[in-house]
Image (cartoon, rainbow, N blue to C red; front, side, top):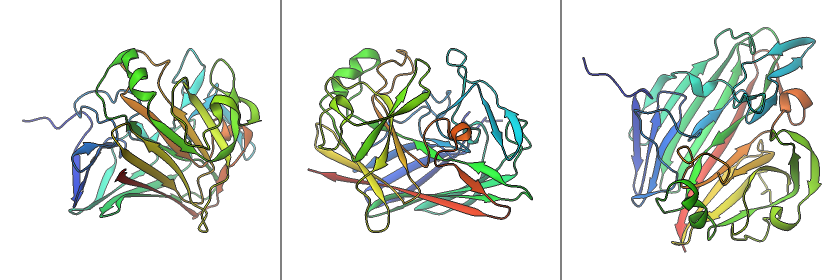
Length: 314
């Protein structure tokens, strides 16, 4: 009997110049192409996902100190994922196979209901739809609280935007540096040696990305907030421009309150990706502990976040 890939079934969708592959494992975006060019760094469907590529970060993005938090009068302990940093990382959704709800030529929908986990016993169902059209990729994520009690919620995604090259290890830095990143946020989140938040500061120096600078001399695994470029509908965009002239605009709806950017400079040789992670989030690290931008889902509540990818040649 032939085994399916370790990341599960591979759901292929396409529309015009666009194509994408979503995995059964974690509803992860494994591949996104425009005019045959990789816009995100793809990964091998038969190997461990190397560096959070394409993950759905739920029910929280980024880190939670010591994996511990209190909610509605109860204390919870989640598994420690990073022992050197003593933190839980990126939630639970990426660890499980998701159920296929619908697959058509240009879109796919998957869902995942959380099991009764000691660190997050809340009964939620997440539905993820990836839809392609001539404008690009639209990702729609809706969480529903099936429970009779409130549930904490925060969300993000983890695309590694491809730099257009194929270097490995530390050679990636030279390929990332000519890329440009435009991010309209007034505040940079300060962190400790474990990459856990310690406070906020006005953007300045290398952390000021408002004028579309190159990434030369800028190595990040940082978050930004206080978004200033919201449209009339509340949306916000980050713009990543490669030296080959491909410009990728990643837009989050009004629920996006922060952006995380990781250039990977401190990531090990084998896991480092040939690009830059640009992660829209409803809340940055430690939201389960601080309550900053934390969503409280009432029983039978829904909460939806929409993110789009658009590309153009300049």
